[in-house]
Structures are given as structure tokens and as C-alpha cells.
Image 1 (tube, rainbow, N blue to C red):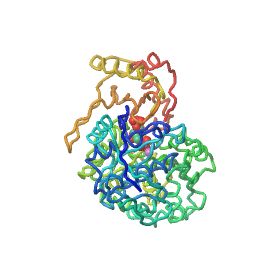
Image 2: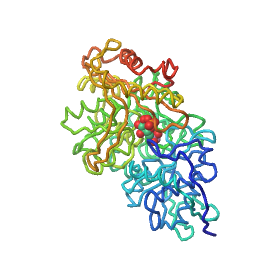
Image 3: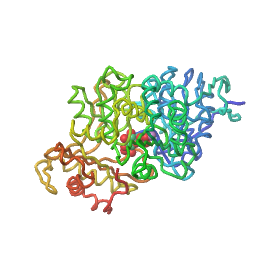
Image 4: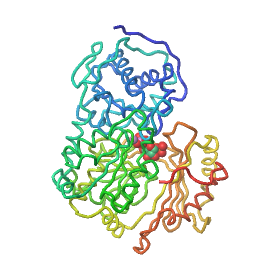
Length: 543
Ligand code: VG1
Ligand code: CO
């Protein structure tokens, strides 16, 4: 076994986005690509010598080989120890938990999350901090800077480490601990939730369907929902993780989780349905004939979290990403809780969670989580829902109806225009930015613009400033349209248009969201000139 230093040159475009660096898998597999980025992480975090890290990924194509490269590089650079999920598998929330309970110096998660996997699809790598959360911009900027200067990396020349057996091994003096990916995470869930109540519910004929979408949550959901909580075998479907997610798109929304939607929207459908994404941090919640929007789910969880033992003393405060609907704000106002608005991406919640300002947070993109880890957590949200259903003894539909009549309903939809040419998408945003001052007071599609600005965030804990986080247009009466470009895509630009309107009249709370939002949709198109800029007349995905 030999330690070698490989000469390299900087590779363009290794700038982490909303959640780590995501590229086409073949790009990551190209000469020095992964190695340069890992070396840049070592530099960005001030070196890896003597440090302990967690390592795991969502099992997508190249996960296993990337793990071996990372281990060889960690050993060559003098890392003390790496805690690895068996077969290099860890869900994102489980990795966050392992970092926290072992007090490590951080961790590397190999995932492109909800993006499809396979040789022609996407791969990704991100670094999480000692608090278990995604690296903040200060650190990702350092990693990016390092990637623009890197000239060499160290790596051990050796055979693969066997990661299939749980236990201790070593590589060139670096300890490697292979752990069961599920056990510690399952123990944490058992501490937070009333497992007895959920077990009774699942034993009473209440039927659930959890769709793991051929991704990483399969083994977690099987162990917790079926083996521990007694859901009948087969309640967890598509439970075997596959490197290309069964050829699907592991994004839990009504479009990509169509099979689950069909099962839930049938008269014989289960009482509760849920799905999770590639790396297990997102969730979709359904009842029979009801789809709960992620923004509504966040608000319902905030209103009812105290039914779960882990949150019985109430919440410290709540937070949502800016484009997420303001349903959460209505609950916070009613309960007297502080409610923070942050930029898109989980890294912006970390400081608020660490400082004890908030204990629950979420995003419109199907991410919800709490201070139990520093990532969003799909299965956690499912268990919190089940805990609430078990205590309240109501159906999902009844819970939604009760929630809307108590707090009002925020109709919500996100329209995505995918793979738009980058310069056209930038032109659209630049044009919007240029006319923000002139918009207030104008009327568009029957709505009057009240406010128009570009969201920027000043972190109340560390004082950091993050600009250009989305264009917000507020209309008289409470409707809102938000425009931003995705930071997780790998082809061209994805324009996201977030649409929202609030309804407090109980007679109007049961409309289809697209028709309830028709005027906001028309106004958004008119203000931004979506068709004029992109040539598109319809979004690719509406969630
Ligand atoms: C998207 C979502 C964002 C989420 C991010 C990572 O980012 O909008 O809310 O935090 O994905 O989720 P963007 O920049 O494409 O809009 V995951 O589950 O893909 O790590
Ligand atoms: Co994810």
C-alpha cells in the first residue's frame, strides 16, 4: 500500500449549489473530478488530518466507487477515523444523526437527492458540519475557492475496503467503522414518537402505504413501520434501493409518485400514504383522496406537534424557506410562536436550530424537519403524522378540514419550467429585477401589485448576508408570486414559479388549487413574460 500524490489542475464549475455539488454522473466519473472536489473539501474545512468523519450516500450509481475513493483520500491525508454506513449507504437524516451522536468533525454525503440516478443521470457530494447540517455558504465558498486553485491530491494506492460487514477495520492507519445505517436512526425515532399509540393505530385496521421509490428509505421504513410498528408486510412498497431508482425519478410529488397517487385516490385506497426521495430527506403526505401540500403539512405539524412526546413541551419557534406558503405563519401567529423566513435550502435553518430559536422548520419542496437532526427528514415527518393521527383519531381529510377552518387555507402551487436555456432564464430574472421599483400600484390580470422586491437574508445568529434569493411579488388581498432559479439542476436552468393565495371563507376552501390560483398564475406570467422569454406556454411540472 502506497501513499501517492497526484498532480491535477483546477476543474471549472465545482461550485456547490442549494445542496452540495451536483453534476451528471459521467462528469463526476471523469478524470480527477471527484478527487479534486474532495481535496477542495479538505482544504475548505481546514484540513482533515486527525479528524473523524461520517460517510454514506443514497446508493445511486457510482455511490460504492466514490466511497472507496473518499476513504483512500481521507486515509492519505491523515484522517483519524471514518464512520461509514454498511455498503456505503446512509440516508441524509441518518448521516446527520450519526455526525451528531458521535460528535464527529462532520461528514460527506454522496447524493443528488431527488434527481434521477444512473450512468446518464446525476450524482452529488456535499459536506455536513459537526452540528450535522449542510455546510453554510461561508464554507461552501471556501470549498469552491479551493477547487479553483487545487494542484494536487493525496490518495492511497490500495484495494477496496470491504464495507459489506458491520464492524471495525482500517486503511493505512485510519480507523474505519462500518455501522448499520438504520439502528441509531430508528432509536432516535423511538425517543421522539409515541410508538405504542402508532402500533395500536396500525393494529386497528388503519392501512398505510409508504412508497420508498426504490431509494434509500426502503430499509428504514421496513424496519420502523413494518418490523417495529406492526404495519402489515407489503405496506412499504418499492423498498429495495436500486442504483437508478428503478429507472424513476425519486422525487415524492404527485407527478413522480404517480403509482402512490393512483392507489390513494381510489375508494379502496389506504387511509394514509407517504413517499420519500432519493436520500430520504423529503416526504409527501396523502390521505385517502387527499393530497396534502408540503406547505400545508408543515403548518399541520406545527399546529399538532405537541401530540408527540418529543415535542410535548411546545415548539421554541418555527421557520420556513421564503417560497414556502405562509400557512405556517398563520399557525405561528395563533400560537404566539416566532416564525422565521429563510432562503431556500436547509443550510439556512442550522443556525436557528443550533441557537434554540426554532424547533420545527420546512420547505415547500416536501422537506420538513426539527431540531432532532440538522437535515430535513422524510420518515420523521411520516411518523409525526402517524403519531398525530393516532392521538387525534381523525382521518387525514378531517385533519385538513379542521386545520383550514381554524387557520384559513393558503392555496399553493409551484410551476417548474425545466431545462430552459440559461441565458434566457437569466434574462427573465434580470428583467424582473430591473422593474421591481415600478411594479407596485400597477394592475395585472385583475390583481394589484402591492409589493415587489428581491429577497435577501441577514442571518440573525452569525450576521451573514445572502442576497438574490428570489423575486417576490405581493398582491393586494394576500396573493403572492415568487420567481427563482433552481440551484440543484444539472441541465440548463430550471425556473421555479411559486404561487399562493389565502382564503378565509369556509365556503371557498375546497377548490382545486390550479383554478383557485388562476388569476395569480396569469398575473405571474404577465409580469415575468414567461412565454416571451422561454417560449414555453406550460410548465413541465406543477406541484
Ligand atoms: C430544491 C428545493 C429546495 C431543497 C433543495 C434540496 O432546491 O427547492 O427547497 O432544499 O432542492 O433538496 P432548488 O435550488 O432546486 O430549488 V434535496 O431533497 O434535492 O437535497
Ligand atoms: Co433529498
